[in-house]
Length: 195
Image (cartoon, rainbow, N blue to C red; front, top):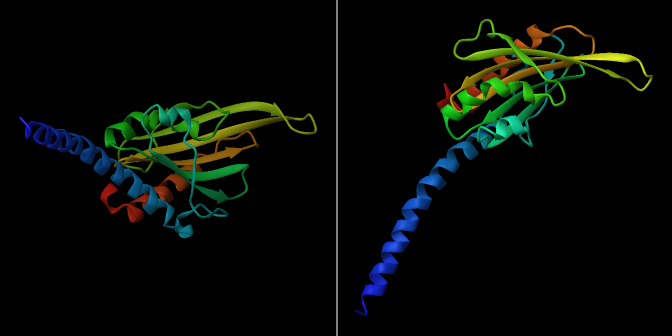
């Protein structure tokens, strides 16, 4: 009977190891994708005219993405004439999670609720083009209409999002689509397995 405890303890150790190893391996995939995205740069020649990509940074994920098990959000701010431009990458543990989160891509710009207005022209696969607007007062108490245009697509386990928030009250689908295409090229180069 003395040997029963060590055998039982080895069995428990092996069982626990079998439970932990797959989850550790699964977590390594998305984390390495985040690391690759943070270690790369966007090719500015793929950007719309008068727009220039900055370096990538990791930010807190929106609640809408967290509901679909997002691992991380990486953003590449874009310098341009609009109030806010950028490319965002929502990294998920599985392609199914990324597919499920695609419709929530409008949450990338907080405070403006957007709705789907169609597919993204010129981009293959599952895509969505979103638009929204809200009015507020600036510091001079003048009414300002903020519009947001979001173009999003799924690339493997990543939702790639090009977005424009502008204060001129008009849609900016052309630069948003250009940002999406630049983001897809960027993620393809940084994450060869996402092709």
